Length: 334
Image (cartoon, rainbow, N blue to C red; front, side, top):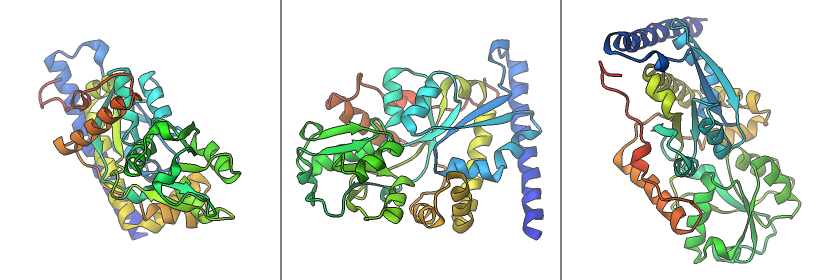
């Protein structure tokens, strides 16, 4: 097919461009004194969640083709949520991943091993606080004294804090229950919890497939951006800046393709997640696309999150988010 021929040409060009980038990195290392112990890795280990743009990159094969001529391979691993992925990254098992707003703040409070390398535009309708359709909870202030399930340290933790503040409450006015998304839904549907803070595609799945549709108490609109961040192991990024550059380029390609072909993107995600097409289509329509560099405004947003969690006694140490923003080495440098 003509489209396949075009894709093949694009893949070849991307691979040649990637080879040029990595060759330049190697050349700068051999000529500029890169220590042997800091030689570039031959594999990039990518952590992804059950949904999002990294899965789309995985399905397109863009990254593997772009890195093939350089001899760098790609190893993919799935993680239930951002906090669990960053635990793996801090432990040296993952080199690159995508997470929500809160996980990197907690990771930075624990160590300096994780850095921000970029972000996606906000997607405020992609997360929400749900209550059963017949729940007596109708306003955010009605959450007082009730149980709310969430994956602590995930993006919805920030949504919950801001939603509670809007309702005149704090985390001390509710009973928070720490549950992964897969454990949260049965607890929610059987009435063991009163409310559930959750993100797509689990949000879309609950809305589309539940026998009794839940009611949305609040989305992130007007409360928090719900921004996704591309993060990397600091040591990996420092030693493999060329691979990080190629990764961000290929993510941008995959995002551009997905935004222009949302139905095909939904098919990819449905195949990977096993979720019904109607669920995934709903989620994809709420997904944001694009790879953006870190900016002072975005860093300030993250700093606000860090300060709020520390003030609430939920973050064990204060952090300076700017210290975790990675900068690629200048041309000719390491």
